[in-house]
Image (cartoon, rainbow, N blue to C red):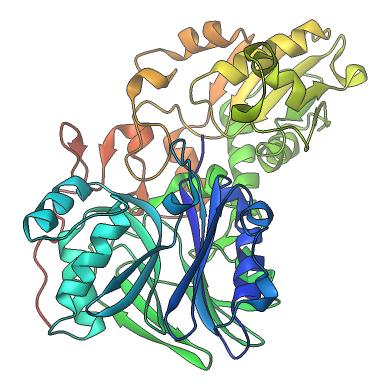
Length: 464
């Protein structure tokens, strides 16, 4: 399971590209397929490439890129094949140069593209960011930036945290439900907006606050301006940011991610106890959860699975036989911990079940007497439509199956998930302020054929 993207914006008294590069390195976990940087130097210039951040910009001299303001993006997609498909997306319009970096999914993007083509717009990239740039340019004809952005927000549905530039002006925007994270920070040379606070940390800066849902923020080297454009009765923060996606050292909406994961493990241990000799995390995503489980249960924590951090990504492995050995290429048991012992393995989630089944079999092969699986999120029973790569129920092992049937599928001696209420307590938010669509099948944004969670959504906004 992968997150869709990470975004950053910098307004600096020095060249911005190097700071953007460092911030993207800190956000690398949010996307590994491509990266891009757009800066203003007389006009907006775009630099994009495939691969990890250091691979994507190998052809460019980062310290030679001029421009004191810019935005950046790290990308995850199973479809990306050329640098031109990476973000930021840049359009030269009658309203000026517009570059957009996006984390999330616009659920009505096809309809928007059809409407824009009927008006005469020609799509080069064909992506939703291009549609948003055209919409913004059209609305900028007779409106201020903030009023134009508000009109765009009325037209688009889904999840989004944007960083974008209109010529040399730099902005960040978060959707009215706050599904995707976005925060503001200050560093030595200026101001930054980023998907996570770790991007501010790497610059030696300090987080100021999170961008509020429905808020537009403009940054300059000397400060920032805020425009609250929309406000919903409820929020819908993605709970998986806390469970899995965000780096454990990030702070999102005022909550430290590591502490949430530790609490998830503690609550999981109380809700789903096990009689075992060791608690073993699935590295690296299950580590904090396993620590909490060990602390609450009293069962010793042991690093019983070692991760190979240099393994190639699956899609570039040369043969099917090698790809099928991926689990043991990535993870290998510590025999003295596993052999003859009862093991509790703790992870953040089970999506398809394929990897967990292979891990359980691997531990048994190396002599585990019992293997108990504990999961720090509720069963994933429904697709995510807001930027996570699990979009069909057929992919999900928990869809239409009981816990006992899932246990049999993965081959464990026992299987336990944290409850939804237990997870909500661990995060420390109100249940109505979290997006729980993939574990409840009720969504905060209307999706055709799916249950709509918030019946009292504000559908009409007053004009300024």
